Amino acid sequence: MTRGERSRSRRTDRPTPLEHLAGVTGLLGATAACIAAVGGLLTAAATLAVSR
Figure 1 (cartoon, helix red, strand yellow):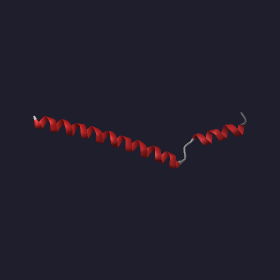
Figure 2 (cartoon, rainbow, N blue to C red; figure 1 turned 135 degrees about the vertical axis):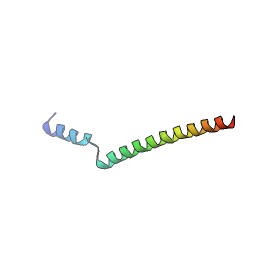
Figure 3 (tube, helix red, strand yellow; figure 1 turned 45 degrees about the vertical axis):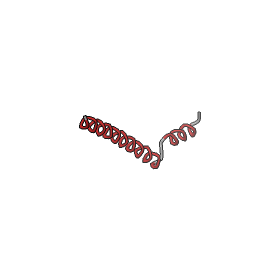
Figure 4 (spheres, rainbow, N blue to C red; figure 1 turned 180 degrees about the vertical axis):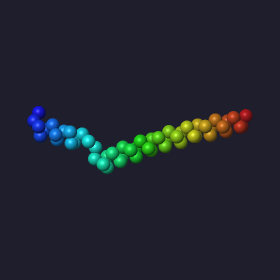
């Protein structure tokens, strides 16, 4: 591997700012979805407990 190839591969391994933003946004979206799912389960459990 030549010096130019090594520096080029290092440069392409780093995500662009847009890719980084997309990754962070996806992570936040997944976290929000998990929180919403837990909230839904708690609401369902509370409804079942009250209806008994």
